[in-house]
Length: 208
Image: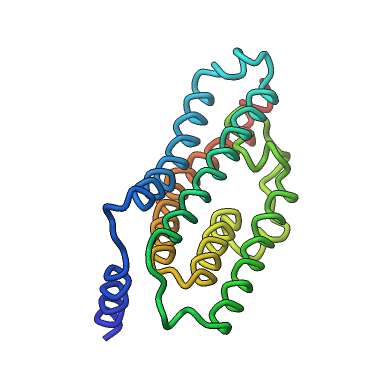
């Protein structure tokens, strides 16, 4: 029964979406490109230290990558918004109650994103561990004691809230793509990050 309901909802959403719209295509491209970019660059840096050598400091290299990621995320949000504005609204979502629900989602998402940033700091947020900038231990305070990967899920909640506030089926579909891309990124990142901290904790690493 649930699968039929999910199929019905997805069919309704797709009825509002024009996938050939350039704004929609741009949103899909930025959503999928951003995590690919930062994962590829971070792994390359972890293996070669080329960015740290180029900037003569792992911190400067990390700050530069972090700035690039922030700018790419601004571009992604812009493309997401333009894709919503270029396609029709869903009448059943275009009401004050749904708008308030969107605001709540935006507030929750922003809380998770900002608290994650303050808990990790700039280098912790922007892949400093790949640059050899390691914390003494993995962070377990709020919001990490409430949710795994709160930065990713907070960002997803922000997009969902933004889509609901705009009564946008296109925004809802793009939010599903954001969540899917983040799930793939987590599967890729989590084991590698754990490996980095295991190496840090190993006796041979401590002796060196």
